[in-house]
Image 1 (cartoon, helix red, strand yellow):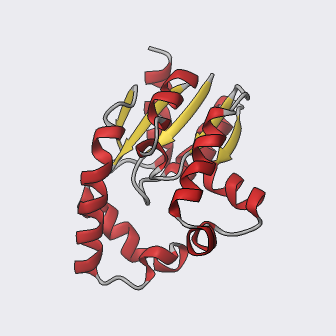
Image 2 (spheres, one colour):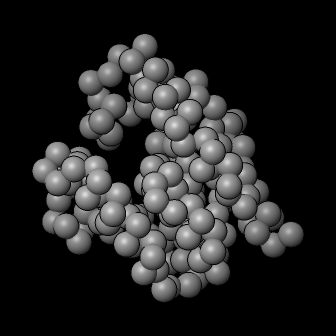
Length: 169
């Protein structure tokens, strides 16, 4: 089984992905980390030097060529929303949308500004606007997920248990 975690930035894909992989004894991958490693540049550097279209093509190529099983993959927040990536990952494996409210996403982004360069220079009002716009653009793709997990007010460990229950229902 291959499990793709999708969701907005700061929805917990990395944290949940690592814990879920450990629980299932699967390998863990992060699409942004794979692309950064292959390109020798960080994701913001790829966007700055080669552009978003180039980056989105790398994401699509990565998904199209995915062959490994017994993996948990944390996708970049935008990966499901471009080209036919959402349809592809639904065919390859099981997709899990980590759903977090917009106010909670803003709160998380405000409390970890240094870990996310794109959001670091934004004040709360700008972040609210950015998150609302992103969510509006991405919601239709996220809604195609095979499993939806409401993550609000739950620890990562509880969320992992909820995912495992849904996977084996």
